[in-house]
Structure formats: C-alpha cells, structure tokens
Amino acid sequence: MKTFPEGRLSVGVLASVLFLCLSSFSRADSLAPLSTQEARLVGTGELEVLLGFAYARDVGFPGFSRSAESLLSAPRLGFSVGLGKRVEIQAGYELRRVEDVTGANDETSYGSGDATLATKVLVWNESSVRPAFGLRAETKLPNADDRKGLGTDETDFLFDALLSRDFGPVRLHGNAGLHILGNPRPEGGQDDLFAYSLALLGPSLPVRRAGLRPALELRGLEGSRFGNDLLGGTLALRFEIGRTVVFTGVGVGFSGAAEDWSVSAGVVRKIDLAELFAKEPR
Image 1 (cartoon, one colour):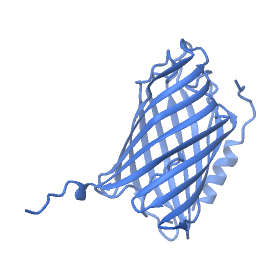
Image 2 (tube, one colour; image 1 turned 90 degrees about the vertical axis):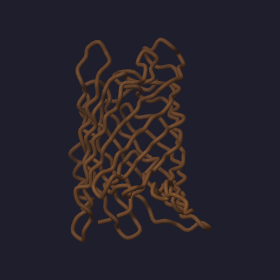
Image 3 (tube, one colour; image 1 turned 120 degrees about the vertical axis):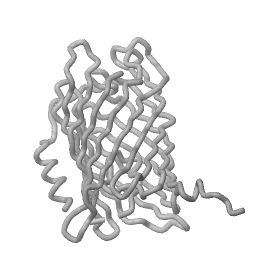
C-alpha cells in the first residue's frame, strides 16, 4: 500500500489559478467521466441517464486512514432532471467491490455503495463579461457498510460553487467548495475539506457521424485532519453522437489519498420526457 505524503500543492495558488482562468457558455451535458460539474443545467423536461463503471488501484478508500488495494464501482448509475430554467435534481447510486481494505473484517467485499441526492441551481447565465455561475448541494446517504470497507456509513454534505465558460470550441469549468464528511472511526469528529477541480474540454473533432472531444481535469481535497487530502488528474475521451455521449477516462494520483491509477467508461443518454410520454394520436 502507498503512504500518504505530507507535501501538497498550495491551496491559495490553485484557487487563484482556478478563478483567474475562469472569467461565457449554454447547453448542459454531464462531464463524465470527470468529477467536475458544469454550471449550466439539463434542459427543462429533460432526463439525463448515466450508466458506467470505474476501477481504481491503491486508493485511500473509504478514507479516514483506511485504503483499498482495489476498488471496482459497477454498475454506476446517475440521473439528472431539469425542473425549470434554474433548478436541476440529481441522484446517483453504485455497487462496489473492494479488495484488501485496511482494518476491514473481510479481505474482499461486494455490496451496496452510497446513494447521493443533489440539487443544482443556476444563478446566472454566461454573458460577454462573465462566466455562467451556479451552486450545488449534495447529500451522501449512509447505506454503504463500513465494516466491510464499502463506505463510511456516514452522512456527508457537499457544497460547491460552479463556474463555466466557452472559449470558442474549448470549454472551461471550475468548482470550489466545502465538503463535510462524517467520521466513522472511534475518535469521531467530522472532516471539513476544501474541494476544488478544474476541467478543460477540447474542441470536438469529427469522426464519421460523431464528435470526439478530449478532456482534462485536475481535482483535489485540502485541509483534512484525518488523511483525506488528495490531488489527482484525469484524461478523458468523449464520443458525442446526437443525444448520446460514450466516455472513457484514465486517472492518476499525484499525492495523498488519491489512487495510483484508475480507469472508467460508460454512456450518458439524454431523454426528452415530453416526447417519451407523449400520447400517440388516435
């Protein structure tokens, strides 16, 4: 197992880079396999469905001084629905297989992961002088078994500010916020973390009837009292075919509880609910 090094990138430097770089853009798509959220919303009456998987080696999971030799999340399910011009509701769930979790009773376990519920609000759209800006609040429900290393069995709260802007064919997204994690260890005490991410989506390259879009992400957590700090990155490819996006990604950890390496893949499909439930003419 890897150790969690003490050295970290400065939060102030990364935050400065994040907000100086972001300073316009309007159709929303999931940024999967990236963890970054964009400020814009799924359209009113649209449902976005995600089905995928992720695999990570030597990762600080489920955190709080524990780590896993391997973590498989399969299947991963995600749902986003637009309730109007300003509000989007999200939900997620996954099954997990973890191997050799530090301090867990079982060497290998498979079972329920965590369910998440989130609300995203668009505060303002992009203009010629400002990026799109939104706010997101997420709750992680305590349904993963901590004794088996499948999760912390704690309720977590995530609050993030979201910025997004288009620079011609290139899209830039940044998130920053507070993540409050419940501690399942005997010492107790919640962990309050500063979370940040920066994602760059490249231009769409024509490939037959699809568009191939590369993407890069830097993500991190800082300020942990329990060894949950991390810094990692992801390189992704997204095949955009009409209302469908097929994605794949490779991640790498730079420090802390981030994975040594990871892979992920899946598909996102947009569904117009009005079309889906429209009555056929007699």
